[in-house]
Length: 123
Image (cartoon, rainbow, N blue to C red; front, top):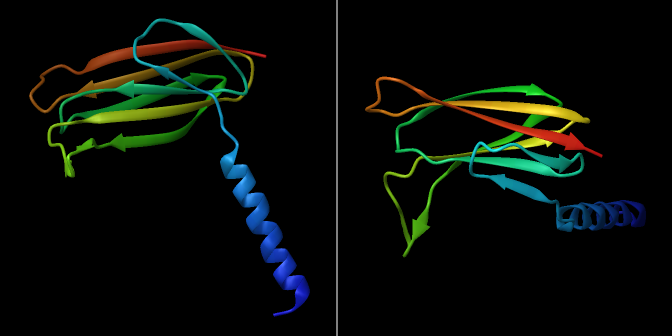
């Protein structure tokens, strides 16, 4: 392997490692009260529900759905049954209002539960 190839690999490892180590601020939302966040931050909406719940989402405004996580809990070396947590991470794309609607329907529920989360993106 040439010196240039080795130098390139080392440079990529350095920059990739430093980018991964940079923290970001995440606002974790657990209720439907509106709030404000700077454009550089992210917003995580946490939805706890029984296992088997189905979720549908709709995002409106100056944000994009950056990540969806289906979260399992592990304690004492065992994954707990019955947990149905979904987390949605929203990245602001500009100033303005963001409206994120989550519709959750549990396995034993006749009517889905609709929750609307709103926040304003500032500079």
